[in-house]
Amino acid sequence: MEAPVDVADAKSRDDVGGVGQSPTQCYSEAYEAHYGRRELLSALLGYREIVTFHPRALEARWARAQMRNIAQLVVPAEELLEAQVELAFDHLERDRAGASGAGQE
Image 1 (cartoon, rainbow, N blue to C red):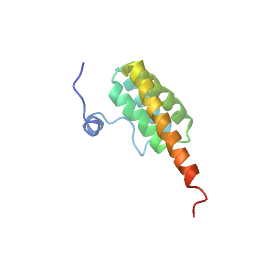
Image 2: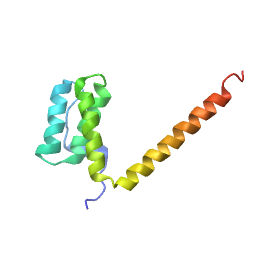
Image 3: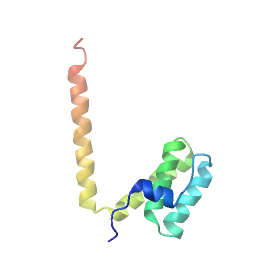
Image 4: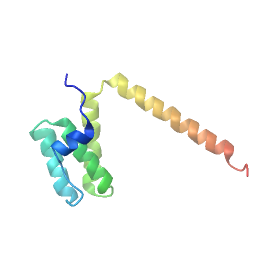
């Protein structure tokens, strides 16, 4: 198992995509990192960049699917479920707090 990698450092070492690139170019680079070079961290960073800078592009939809694929590959299923359940609790509690606070002005 590899040592933890500083995401900012990984981004500077292997710059996948870029703000000035089209979503197609960014996706192509992230996909090559993912499936061509098997550099999952670089691919994940590239896919996240597409979603961040080109959220409505078709490539952002593909990037989200690829990010899920990577997460399912590297994170044990039990850990993914636990994180999803915690997020669900957080959202439900926030919604309940918002609903109980509505109309109290």
